[in-house]
Image 1 (cartoon, rainbow, N blue to C red):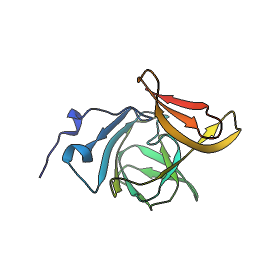
Image 2 (image 1 turned 45 degrees about the vertical axis):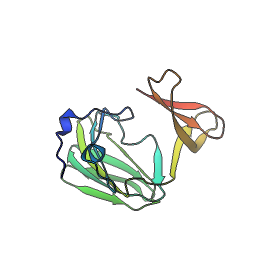
Image 3 (image 1 turned 180 degrees about the vertical axis):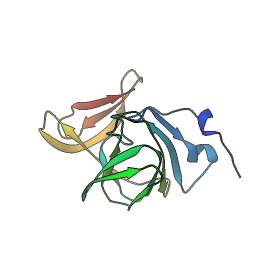
Length: 155
């Protein structure tokens, strides 16, 4: 058994104001659990994506999250839960003026191949992307696999 205080965990760099790796801190081997705080405009993910082998569940503790899905947009409010199967594309955003807190859980913990689609201004469309650490190590960037352009930077 392991127990952690979420507030004591370090936040990871990315598109959310706060992302704390709860599952890793607990030593969970088969389940990824992340605690998120999203300011207005923040997202859980670097882009519209699908995990090859991982299903995901998002539990919104506070606020409202708008998920872009293959079936259109879906709003998930405080006290609500949404599930995505492995291979199902999605991206959750805080499109409100309010603060969001949520838990994201995925199984298995390692999701296999990630397909990440982001808008590339150079290509004029949504293209396959990778996430890389910036040269200075002070940011993560999304890079278009078609043209090599950096499309977003997260500190």
